[in-house]
Image 1 (cartoon, protein in one colour):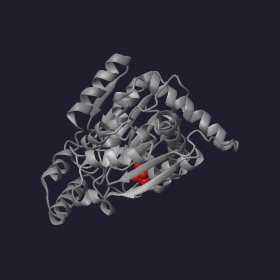
Image 2 (spheres, protein in one colour; image 1 turned 30 degrees about the vertical axis):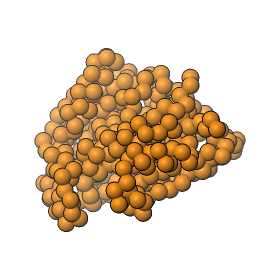
Image 3 (cartoon, helix red, strand yellow; image 1 turned 90 degrees about the horizontal axis):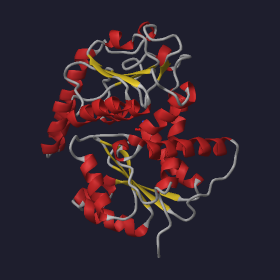
Image 4 (tube, rainbow, N blue to C red; image 1 turned 180 degrees about the horizontal axis):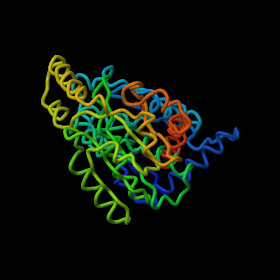
Length: 342
Ligand code: CP
């Protein structure tokens, strides 16, 4: 399968067979990594990593992954570039594309901004653009999640139930892209999805529509509720995490000053605080199947989204899940980046 030059912006843009290819390659690269076999698949290539937000896992998966593929990942903090003086996505795309072999972008905190920024960059360059998290999807995270789920439950996931649940967090208004990425991707791979959240925490209408259509096409279930306990019942996979209220976060597109943005963040956190009881604890874990696993993309707000007993307990798979960010990032880069035709 030749995926060279293909952008990886949303899993919705990729066929199931193409995603299967990435998963198989990630499994192989993981085995190579564990057994000390070198994988110099991208010699002398450069991946630019452009961040509009903070990161631990994603940045390090891409930087370490590029090194392990014999490439170089070049970190760019958007605030230290001319983007902060208004340089356009088109100009940035043309310039970075002329100097390297891939452009990876994280732009996730403003609904309506990140995905469209990435697509403008992609339109301006022939090198592939990889989404390291936007306002709509976090497709490198959900690929790692799917790799982890298949390692635990096998490739036939038919009849297995994943619960994508809102959870309380006081730290910051987290992007919507992880739950949105999960509800759209997982039904395509056989999982029944239950989405549960308080009324103010609706996801983007287009993602809900994609999730419904994907489930229908795959013959899987997509259900929505506001009862966290009821949702947990009979689940195989629990994925409780926080996200910000869409209606409030959407206002950011029009906000100009740091003070306005800080006030918006405070309003998001004030609303979150209405739902402090939305925590994944040992009582709730018992509502799911005995062999159910706890997942989280991390960072988790310990003591708020989840208790230490759960995240450090025997059902938690968060650390293997985080490690799989490396193997899947390598599979994506190795599949889409290519030698430049000089
Ligand atoms: N899960 C995830 O994307 O982690 P980082 O924000 O640390 O990259």
